[in-house]
Structures are given as C-alpha cells and as structure tokens.
Amino acid sequence: MSGLLCPADEAGVVEAVRAASADRAPLAVEGNGTKRASLRPVQAARGLSTRALAGITLYKPQEMVLSARAGTPIPEIEAALAERGQMLIGEPPDFSALMGTTAPATLGGIVGANLTGPRRIFASGATRDHVLGVRAVTGHAEVVRSGGRVHKDVTGLDLRKLLAGSHGTLGILTEITLKVLPRAETQATLAIAVDSLAQGVAVLSAGLGSPFGVTGAALLPEGDAEHGLSGPTALLRLEDFFEFLPHRSSALRALLERFGTLRVLEAEASAALWRAVRDAAPLGPVGEEEAVWRLSVRPQAGPAVAAALRDAFGARLLLDWGGGLVWTAGPATAAAHEAVMRAAREAHGTFTLFRAPDALRASVAVLPEEPAPLAAIAARVKAAMDPAGVLNPGRMRAGA
Image (cartoon, rainbow, N blue to C red):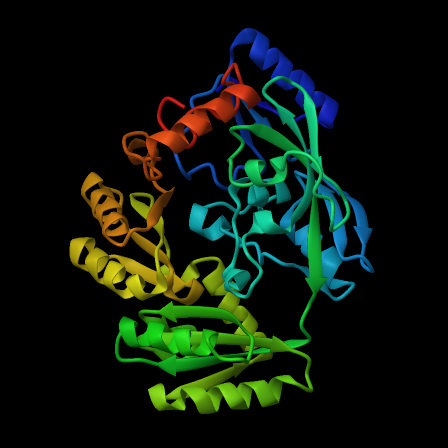
C-alpha cells in the first residue's frame, strides 16, 4: 500500500471512495487495524482508516440508545455507559493481545466483523441484532442510511444486518446506533471440575436449561491457574442485583453439585475470568508462526471437534457459548488448516481462520465455501453495493 488515508469526516470518506473508484485503486478499509491479521490479506493500492471518525454523537440513557462514529474506541463507549450503569449488550471482545497489538478495537470494527462475546447465549443474539441504525459509504461513493435511532424502526431494506459482518466489503460504516442495557450490579461464576469435555458440555447444558438466567457458559480444557482452576473446568456465570444473586447462585449450585467439585468466584474475580474468556486469553500467547481458528458447531459436537483437533496437531482449546464456539490455536500450516476444515465439515459447522501469518491466509480458504445459490446472491449484492470492487477486495474470499 502506498499510504493510509484517515478522513476527518464522512465527506472525506466519500471523496476517498470516489477517487478510488475513478482510479480503479482498491482500498484496504480498517478502523485501528486490530484485525489486520484476520481473514485474507487485502491487496490494495492504499489504506483507509476510520479512526479519525470518533466520538459519541447521541446517548439517551432513558431510552437505552447510543450512537457513535465508527472510529470510536470501544473502551470510550463502555466508560460512558458505565457512568450511567449501562453496557453494550454484545459484550464486545478485545482481541488486541491475541492479534499482537495494543490499539483498542473500534465500534465500526466490532460491528463490521459482527463480533460478540460470551453473553451471546443469553437470549441477546449477535452484535448485528442490537444495531438500530447505520450510516455508511458504499462503493458508489454514496452515503446510505439504514434503520434509525428508535427501537421500532423497521422501514426499508435492512442494510444494517447486511453490513454487520461484511468486513468492510460492502460499505464503510461511518456512524452506528445501538441498543444498550442496564448493567448488573454484581456477578458470580460457578466453576465445576469435570472429568472430560463431554461431561463439561453436559454441565453447561444443565445450567443453560435451568431457570436461573445463566449469562455465560464456557469450558476451559486446561483450567485456569491464575484462578486456582486445574484440569477441565466448566464455567457458568450469573449476573443480578446484590440482593437476588445469592439465592440464584445457591439454587444453581444445588442443581450442579452432582457433577463434581464446585467453586464459586465472586464479583471481580468472576469478571476477570470472563474477560479472559471473552478475549480468548486461555489459548495462551500466540506465536508469530501460529494460527488461531474459530469453529461454530452444535454444542454437543464441541467435545468431538476438540478431540479431533488435539489428535491432529495438539491444538490448544477454549470452548464458549455452551460448547458451540470452539477456539483453537496451533501451527500455521496447511495440514493444521485442513484438519480444522475437516472437523468443521464433519460436525456440520463452520470455521474462520481468525489469525495467521500472511502466507497461510493468502493460500487457503479462510471461510467455508458458500453453496452456489448463496454465492450467486452474494455476488449480486457485492455488484450492487461496490461495482468497481474497491472495498476490501479479497478480504473474505479469493477473487472476490
């Protein structure tokens, strides 16, 4: 790339896209570049960052609605919400350590990649499900708006859902409006020692099937020495008001004691543990010649997938979302990647090459192949939104 453009406003983004389209010079679109090592390398003439498009533009705590420009750092948004006892619903992860950077993720980056933390299993859905409205610049150098700033705005084509998770290939997000929720006063985590990953998923399923409102369900195959957890450990999180949490915690503990030794981590100890799970920290330090994959499968298939990956290349593992999200780290080789694809395929799930050296990312499929009818629809959408192909070309699929 010849340089990095940092427009100061939406008009600057429009002009940059117009020039790129006229010159047929593709743009590598990013926020703070925290996910630059994810998916495929973008071959572009220049980069365009939204980091200068920062700041909260609207916050109505009573209506639980917040709008911010795409380049706004997530910690800035979380701090503003915390002052009013509120939070982002999707529990956005911080992958700076995993990606080897110190820069914080931006709102546009989180929404553009549709990244959601452990709370997804608690009837909250993915990040895209909490987006009320967006402003974006398409490959036509046109500003589009989808949705609005109220909870019941459902008019028009729902471009919000289309742009969330498109990784900057369909449009450049400039402003995003989100639903937010009240933050729980406190939390507790029940940590249950298990004999196997299969038993661990059974524990998580029992907790999630209970009436006690579990908001996090993860499995640490190697435990967590920092919190005194050795061996495979199932984690179930409860969040509530101070006066109600003890009753719910005791009731869930009584339900789960039959599975094995159980510990309760309170308040900040619980919060620190779930921040680690959120950020995939239990995978440990990831070396420059290693890769990280995410597999999404049925929770009951998680243990078999984990076993297959361990057998294939000694994978380091973390299971979240009740066992249905399998994080794995290992050597950045074609053989390891083939093992991941095979495991996902046999489990009827999906995979993402989440982080890897450029050589591997450029030579393999970083996402599963789409069925022909879906691929045809995706191609038509891309042609309609970015006819000159200047926005993050090849980011998700070779030749796209």
